[in-house]
Image (tube, rainbow, N blue to C red):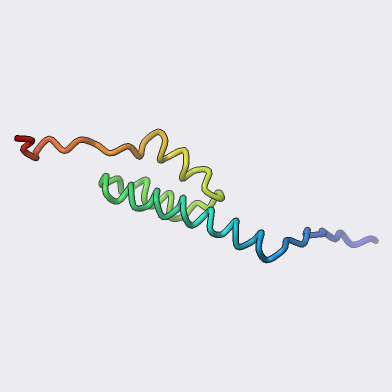
Length: 75
């Protein structure tokens, strides 16, 4: 009986650092924006789901826009 082995490709340390920086940037921005918009559900989802920034970017483009605050006086 043969054993099944999976080969994991070797990534250079600078590539891993670049991926980490990319992911942290988008995750941080999306979490900050969801907290500022008082969107707790999105905050929890973004905190728990790691997609290399893809879900974070989608959130920022579609649901993460700043909402106007109508209680402020503009004059």
